Length: 269
Ligand SMILES: NC(=O)C1=CN([C@@H]2O[C@H](COP(=O)(O)OP(=O)(O)OC[C@H]3O[C@@H](n4cnc5c(N)ncnc54)[C@H](O)[C@@H]3O)[C@@H](O)[C@H]2O)C=CC1
Ligand SMILES: Nc1nc(O)c(N)c(N[C@@H]2O[C@H](COP(=O)(O)O)[C@@H](O)[C@H]2O)n1
View 1 (cartoon, protein in one colour):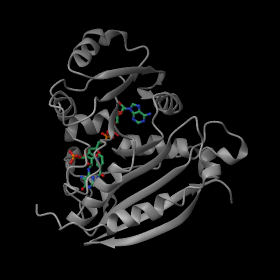
View 2 (tube, protein in one colour):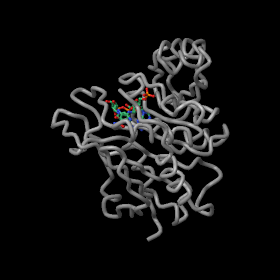
View 3 (tube, helix red, strand yellow):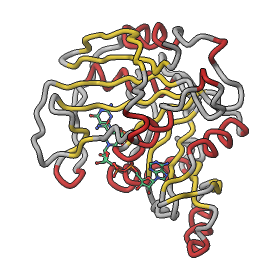
View 4 (cartoon, protein in one colour):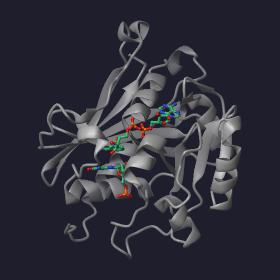
């Protein structure tokens, strides 16, 4: 894939989007969250049986790498970590423009299924990536050997509560904040997008201590994947469906052939 020549317009787009975060809505005890993913025109984020698809064009993919460079940490679920074996780094930003600090990879992995030879751990061992942080279930007792193997391979493991295989997002965010993470980019996949959308629904303006400041940035590619593809679900509860979050439009830009839209979940309507 040929990448475009150095071009800072994607960076400028992101800087203007993130400058819309108002300081008095930013909480000090949890990171600001950017939820982001690429989708086809028919709303799919991957192909049949979760096959990884290159949906983004070079310009919007470069924007994603700029976005990575503007966050302290990048989170994916174990489904994505196993399926895509991602690197979550900023390698597409041309050298010379690329910030020297690397984003921290974070994986939600309730039962510690991450492979010890995955790219995230390999990159850390080779000095080209930060040490991956893995969040697992505090009752994943059966996973003692896998935990030791992952730690030996270079991972740091944190425990949080877990219900039905889903880790507590408030606890993950609180721990990340304790570790100094102020901004978190959530890259997917389908289940994690759903988890964060449901969580972001909680109305923090009404005194709910679990609410968070969430910006959503989606890349829409002019591609049809078809019904075999994997989509993401909003998955709100009945109560949440009666009180859908208000999305404030921030900015939409065409990047190459893709459309990139930024919105902010607002509960102050
Ligand atoms: N187009 C895009 O931008 C992206 C596409 N993808 C695609 O998404 C697919 C993977 O999606 P999924 O299988 O749904 O896996 P996922 O990456 O969403 O991971 C889901 C798993 O994470 C664990 N988890 C722990 N706590 C959780 C929580 N609170 N909320 C949600 N999950 C939690 C659970 O074991 C759950 O099964 C792949 O096909 C991948 O290619 C992934 C990222 C971005
Ligand atoms: N922005 C974007 N566009 C696509 O077309 C994609 N398939 C993805 N996928 C995400 O990027 C991860 C791969 O990252 P590396 O290239 O290995 O750094 C993948 O796991 C998804 O999170 N994103």
